[in-house]
Structure formats: C-alpha cells, structure tokens
Length: 458
Image 1 (cartoon, rainbow, N blue to C red):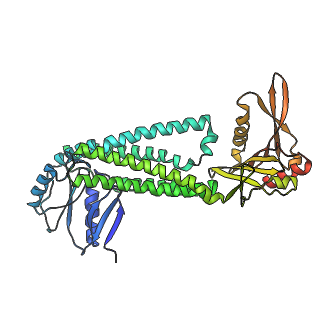
Image 2: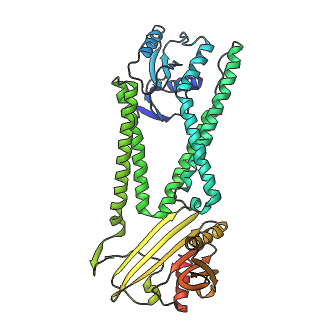
Image 3: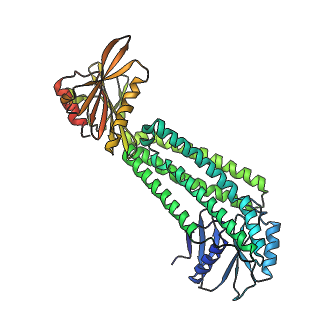
C-alpha cells in the first residue's frame, strides 16, 4: 500500500475556497497534504478524519524568500494560538490545518481577504501571466505570418504539433486573466454589499485541465511524428532531450527550495537559481547534441575506407538504387536516408554513391509524401521554387507516361533566351512529389519505368 501519492495541481492561487474544500475531502479519504511542488501536490497516508483547512496569504513573501520569514513566523504564532498548524506554502498562499471540530476562522474580514489576495496576485500571478500572454501573442503572430507567406515550411516542420502549444498558451493565459478579472469584479461587488468573496467554481480548474491534456496530446503527436518521419536516430534524441528537460525543471526547483531553506537572501536565491538553470541548460543541449552525433554510428552501421573514400559495410536499404537502374552490382556503396517533416508532409532525402571502376556514380532524390490531396499544389510549388529563385532555372512540363507518373517536369538552365535541359526531374502522383537527379545514369525507357515503379509507391 502506498504511503505517498502525487496529484497534478489545477488550482490557481486565488482559488482559496476550492483548495480548502479539496484538501478537506482528501483528509476525509485518508490523505493529508504534505507539500506543494511546482506542478504536483504530495499527500501522505493518514487515518481518515474530519479536519478543517484554511488558506491565507502573505503578499510580502515569494517563492524565493528565505526561510524562516519574519512575517510568516508572526503569522504562524498568531494562528497557533487558535489551533491552526502550518501545512504548506505556495508562493504567497499559506495553508493551515485545524483538528478542532469548530475552529475559529482565520479570516473574518472579507474586504481584508480580498485586498491581500489581490496584492498577492499582483506580485506573482499577474506579472508572469501578462509576460506569457505577450510572448504567446508574438509567437502566434509569427506563425500566422509564416502560414500566409510560406505555409509549406510550417506544415512540413517536425515541430508542427509542438508549435500549437503557443496557441494553447495564448488561450490559457487569456482565459486565466479574464477569469481572475471576472472573479475580482464579482468579489468586490459582493464585499461592498457585506457578503463574501465570490466562489471561483470548478470551471476554471476544468479549463486548465483540458489545456493540460491538449498539451500532452500535442507532445504525443510530436513524438509519433518524429519517429515516423525522422527515424530512430532523431526519435532517440528527442526522447532523451525531453527527459533531460523534465530533469532540468526538477533540479532547478530543488535548487530554489534548498536555497530558500538555507535562508539565502531573495536576490541571491534568484541569481543562483538562474545560474543553475543556465548551466544545466547548456549541459542539456551539449549532451543531447553529443548523443545525436554519436548515435549516427549506432544507426548507420560500420564503415570502411577504400581509395580515399568512406564506404558502408552494410548499406541501408533505399527505395531506388543505382543497381536498380543499371543492372550492375557495386562492391563499394555509400548511402544516406534522412527523414524529416510532419504527419501532414513527410520528406525523405536519399543519396547513394557507388564506385564504378575508377568513377563515382551518384543518385539523389527526395520523396515528399502528402497526407492530404489538398497539399499537392503546395508541395509541387515548393519543389519548383527551390531551383527557380535565382532566375536562371525553370521547370518545363514533359511527357509523364514513361515514368508512370501523372505529371512530370524537367529542369532547364540558361539566360538571355538560351536554355539547356538538365537531368533533374520532378515526378508527381496524387499522394507524392518526387525530385530526382539522374546525372550519372543513361535515361532509357527502362530506367524511366524503373524510377516510376520504385518511387511511385515508396
């Protein structure tokens, strides 16, 4: 039987009534609050009991204020006289428990309660939420600009799903700020009429919980998309990077708490915590980068050297090889197969170099696979624009039947009205666009048919 349990905290700091009711229900089920972390609340098992929790606030303290705080010690001494014992703190929120059946209330003046809550919110919650809202607005604005000017780069990005976190952050911060403003107005009207502060209600907690699940869903889609489009190498990198990021957050918070318990001054605590954050971030990025590069040998296999070149001992499998086009077997082969993109637009870049006697033969092609038919024109335009931006290249439509494609284009190069065709082609099917360079291959009908057969369904 577990003696500890953790619960994700969905309460905001001004929802004192919701916190009190929740903690009393947990105590009745045999779970007492032990501490509050940055994201999770920790409970310890105890005998089920009917106890009373109360929440009050100290606007003068913060998450970086040293312990023991003079204001907090004074508050605890005052509360102890009435049987209230401190349980945990969360920024300016102070949580107390009382075992008596009918304890004296901690707060009796609702106008004072409302004032200290608002002062606490202005010190911690409101500034950070406004900054996060402004940052989210900027990032969403940049995404909209990219979507309007270069939609392909956004839709084909491996970070497509995680980019929507900015939209969720915008909704989250705007929703929380608007909810607090509404609560504050209702509370002021109620207190002015001699009543109590307004009840936040469960709606805000449900709203935050929905946003959390949406973020987790986007993270899952991102990991799935990464594994499907980039392969095991980048997938391992992202998994390790995510785990490292979670570890970084936990270590930074532990550093802050340790400095706080040691009585470190608030300014020094902030400085040292930020320093630890920066150092750990550098270590995280450095170690992840090292893992990414060192894993290349793990996933690409062993290599050997011959005639000044590096060759694969066991070449990876490619949809189309030089051997498929020439019918010849090559002893020395070097291959690359790199994936990128998203679940909407998946990109696969393949390159093969073979040693043919004293000469090198190189085969290059890129396969863009589309999840939706509506992305076809966008992908074709992107492939063509990669060559035509300089003004010296143009794509000319050519006969697609020999390729077994629905459309085909050949690259031309030139200026001043003189054009020369190049061995670069774009081949199109409803669900894919293929760009291929056939510089070192004789373009026979058999070769064209083999290219279409292999890449049209790769």
